[in-house]
Length: 152
Image (cartoon, rainbow, N blue to C red; front, top):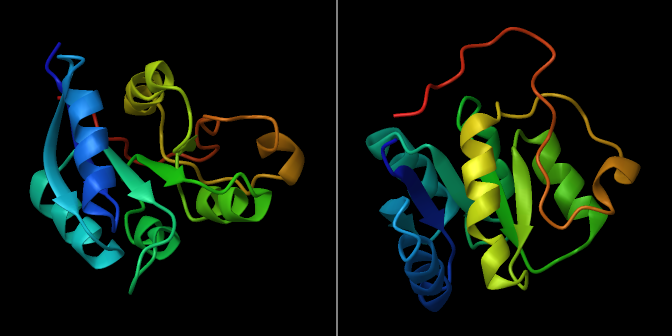
């Protein structure tokens, strides 16, 4: 199988560099673009057609939640330091496939990316109970038919 193609969107250059190093060290993931805000993330996703976008939830200008809304057919994993249900629920409602806490152990970073490759973007409205116990979750498949991107 070809490597998983990822765009990393985070306003902190050191965070982007760290995620890139960890992900590419697996040998199964290639970072095709980096973005410092939501507008750049939307543009990078359009230009590079990644399998997954890792999107920071809070960035200057357009935040990760609004950028996720603008990528309706894209698999997006939200990156957050906030374990607050309200942020996670808003991100899932916006269409994110799941989320990853930035302080998750290193070994847990790449499996959610791989699972997200197989998942379809989220369309249902999650409840707090469905999110509060997951540190890296993905929504169930969409309940209505929509075109899904195939793995490259």
